[in-house]
Length: 91
Image (cartoon, rainbow, N blue to C red; front, side, top):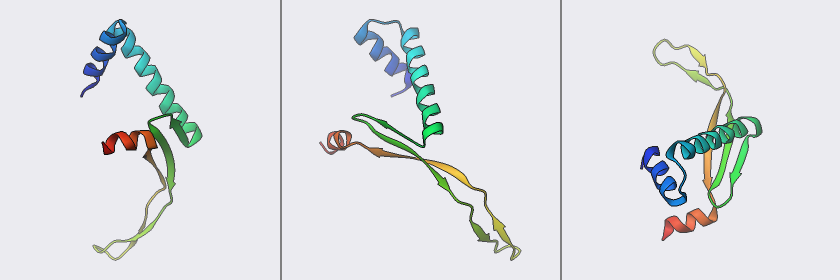
């Protein structure tokens, strides 16, 4: 399903315009992304938890020229399902 289909479904169900639903969803996703950046961990009830994890720099060996390379640190985003979502997936 694409975003347009979600918007149409929500719009039909609740009687709001697609533009209004689009603005609400965009604002929600913006707030969610900002909270993940600020707090490292965000939980959405009945859905799951998004967690930001720092991946430390690593020293790697280059087989091409025999030198060592050091990678930079970066963040990885992980998602863990809630028990309710996991149960729905198993059915």
